[in-house]
Length: 296
Image (cartoon, rainbow, N blue to C red; front, side):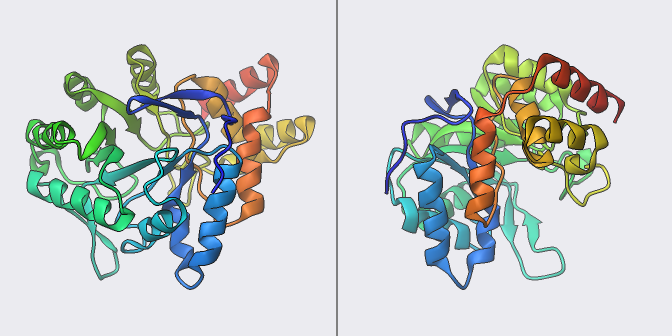
């Protein structure tokens, strides 16, 4: 395995280390259940292109994604591994169930360590069911944040995890959690879904990495697809890129602490995602996209 020293998109801090601003989201690895060698080849190509951090979870494919990451990278320190806790895999119409109690969070960290073949996770995101898309509960059913953070801090002190992140949270939760040493925040966010601009501003001010999921939208009605937006399509033609690349390039230009974790099962698509690091939008194009997002 060769890890390029090139940092696509530049670099930002994540869990006490500097990483490329373009990483890889491992949920797409669920598609490789019948061809894990092809998935390993995909990850090796990502490393060759300079991708040095992957975002995963033990419940992706019921440990499938983690097993592929283990096969591809082992415990190589050159690759930062970020995982998440707060849910578990179940059989049923909805494949996930919440697992939010402190002891459940520890069990999930231990499961990630086993399936990844690692002694330490660089960052672990606490996924809270405060906001969608995905699993949510009424506020009076949320597990106490301080109890959860106490367990996360204990695991950090024990050396099981390097940094603590948050996912699917509101701004007051981030403010309350910052004293625990939060290193990143993952919320649904894109050019056309910018509900968390105040949270992003706080992350910039605090040096916290901003890691948007659904960065190009999704099938969820509140997450429109960026590539379908006419202005995005026109600017893509102007710069000789795809609409998806323009949507990702806007995210990198919008805030210096943004880390992308777009996932794919295609090497050619992976190469397109990484190439976004070299795509430069003009100030006029960025202003046009800003206006589109503000009106969305």
